[in-house]
Image (cartoon, rainbow, N blue to C red; front, side, top):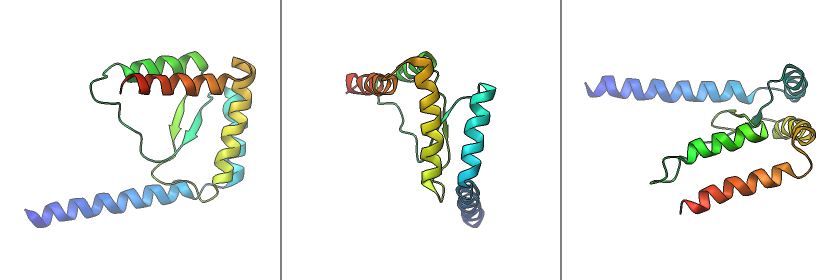
Length: 126
């Protein structure tokens, strides 16, 4: 039984590394192409990476509030995986293109307002 458990854990670890490595191999041009295509197709999203923070304990509605805030500003977050791509400048360029597009949609300074609203939700939960 213990050997089977060790095999399952080792398999999961290998799978995570394989998935992370594949996502990290995207090239700068892939992000640039995707940003233009995504904007054109109305599938606008921002890319992040790393672990997603869980909602603070005792605040069950914060996820719904953040989803509502995301919908208001047209933000859809896509997590790139556990590690950044090999060329993080490509990720930043992709996000900058999307933020420029969303600035036209939401008006100048929208991202600062968005960040302050998210921070406010988390700070009120403390």
